[in-house]
Image 1 (tube, one colour):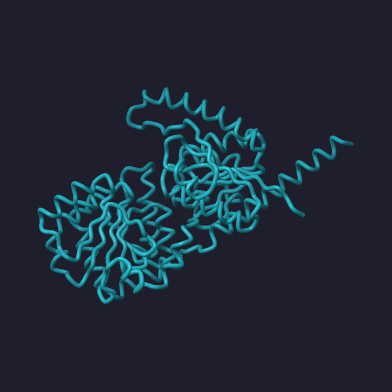
Image 2 (cartoon, rainbow, N blue to C red):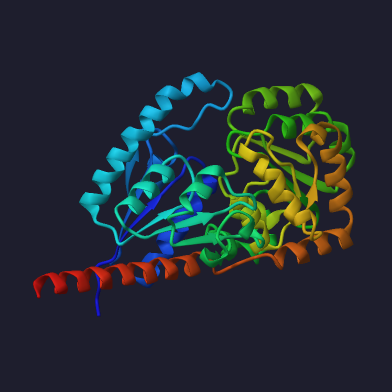
Length: 384
């Protein structure tokens, strides 16, 4: 029987929330092409641009995050939360979804809280190995929590947990098989090893300083090619400083890697922050990785993400404080150790969940079906 599915997906703020959200939406559409999907994000955040680019509708809430350093500034934040909850109620009332999915980010809080109050089933997609405060609160009324790590009953009711993994960008897998082609497309020598260094779209100061402090080490290892994404915020400064230091021929400096699929396919070793979405991509591709957790995230969850892999010999951990001195040395030693690369690659791949988006989409539609059937029964009883 044909059904008119209507789903809200809420969250965003970073690519780590937006890419999984879009993957879930795509998976829902692959199962039910006529499904109507509405995104609810935060005004002036990157989802307001990325989601329409992907072909989906989005509505913004006037939400902002708490200021943990200056608590007195949160008076305005509390007002914005109340305003966002009122707007979320109107969005839900007008759109009439059968299920609401939260992927993390500022907007997911008021949207899922309001949906639960309106007796609409909610699903949380928790990406990290350490749950945040908002998701722990939302979990009380959620029907299911889809997680990427084992042991999440520390934070959530065991009976609500579903181990699905984190959805990843679909174009990465298609590129992964052909390293030589990816190397050539980036102007690299397929016969030489490659290290990809990425600190996020804005960049990471500690990782950038680690490159600058080890220019001579990079230069003397001419059989290794380095792709260095400085981030847009740091690019002009880093470009000038590396030129002053004598830029090695085997170092590619860019503000942003536009074709990440090719870059990941080319890399023998990746150096990265420890965001949950990135880790899931590395696992799916079986990439050997050195993780440098950001110290500027709530509950230090990136360190916890990294250590979940380190415990299984599936990644190497270098702290942000040690990065300047240790990161490039560790990268050179690791990429030159074929056995270590193979061990890291093999172990991280065991943690991959390649069907995460499809598995979550199926659960979304199961809850939507249950809601439709309940509403149908209610209407029939009222008629009688």
